Length: 229
Ligand code: ADP
Ligand code: ADP
Image (cartoon, rainbow, N blue to C red; front, side, top):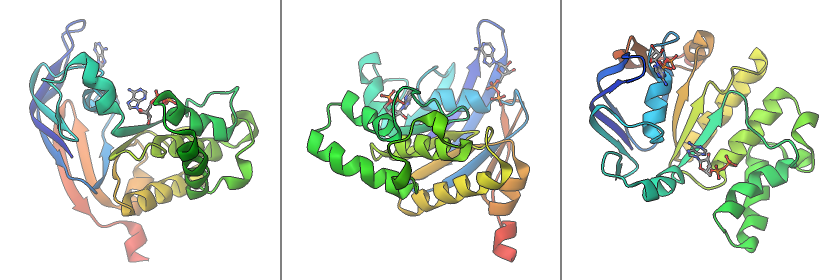
């Protein structure tokens, strides 16, 4: 669960009010698109959820953590409840698909036996079993993003944040990535997807949170074009 109560962020360096008294609640199991023009405050919102920055005022609650009260030493525990997918994939080029995914579990000292069963399972969920031994450069953009999704999923997070996940891939494959996020959501994981791509949002519909100049000016569930066809 993600909840913002009267959250404001002012960046000291620029004096910019990036968010103004935002109120927002994303329940467990929700799927929401976050849209809005460049500079609206979308990245600031994501950085708050990950506690990469702190709110200037207001309360941010994420997966049972009150982020204002969360000590530095507890930040990794918060982040383990969140999987993140970035626009530029951020895969490790010297590691295979399997190793990129397994790495996440190795750094948290998961048992080897668990890693050996869990990693092939999440790789199969994203449809890449036959590419497990490939290196990222041998994959298409859409496939690389699916690896990034497997990596975000492997630790069974409560929440996945996808920050412009389709920004660097073929428009046709963008739909597949969102379909995949939808199927992950149907298994219970909360998804927050930031996107510029209005066509995608119109096609899928669902909850759309529009941020504009640091305020939420629209937060509603709308029907998608896919539901009409
Ligand atoms: P978006 O992700 O929607 O493009 P951002 O959250 O990145 O928007 O930015 C919101 C506002 O805050 C913009 O005016 C931006 O210039 C400003 N801003 C973002 N990051 C910083 C920073 N680190 N220091 C100063 N100002 C920033
Ligand atoms: P990796 O470097 O392979 O992405 P990490 O060990 O850094 O893996 O992260 C472990 C888990 O924490 C991953 O599921 C990752 O998506 C998640 N995570 C949450 N927040 C962050 C963050 N700000 N930076 C990096 N990983 C994060």
